[in-house]
Amino acid sequence: ETYSTQILKDEAATIHTAEVLATQLKPGQVIYLHGDLGAGKTTLVRGILHALGHVGKVKSPTYTIVEPYALSLGVCYHFDLYRFQDPEEWEAAGFRDYFNPDSLCLVEWPARAESVLPRPDIEIQFEILPHGRVLQIISQHALALEGLCQ
Ligand code: ADP
Ligand code: MG
Image (cartoon, helix red, strand yellow):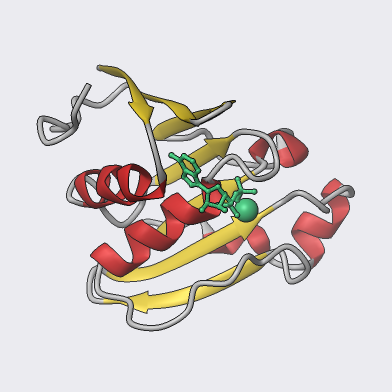
């Protein structure tokens, strides 16, 4: 079991956390990212994808809902469900199949698709402070996050 709380004072701290977290990620996992608009969810995903070897841009899939990345560990799907409304669209778009033992799924705004999403392996929650962010990482797995400053 993991329960970690950190203060991230700037974007560089968010990227550092992404790099530590990336060492713990495996195909088959589902990661939920909670937090308001501008909290840092996509920044964290960008840091994770770069740490896992992706070279190039990571754009927010706000309109496309999902963006795939071919990584050496397997495929990673980055979901942004901010605009997702209709659970029937989930089946029609084939999103269920994106969650499989060979894929890593990073999901922004998971509450928008609560009824259809698989349960998470790791939940990450951002809170916005005037200068910086509070980040919580919660998981039923024991994650090795020693590299994180508290
Ligand atoms: P979200 O995906 O949650 O809507 P984004 O990652 O797109 O948020 O945007 C977050 C914004 O906050 C970016 O401008 C980024 O530079 C900034 N940011 C990221 N981490 C921090 C931090 N720890 N402290 C302050 N600003 C941050
Ligand atoms: Mg985002």
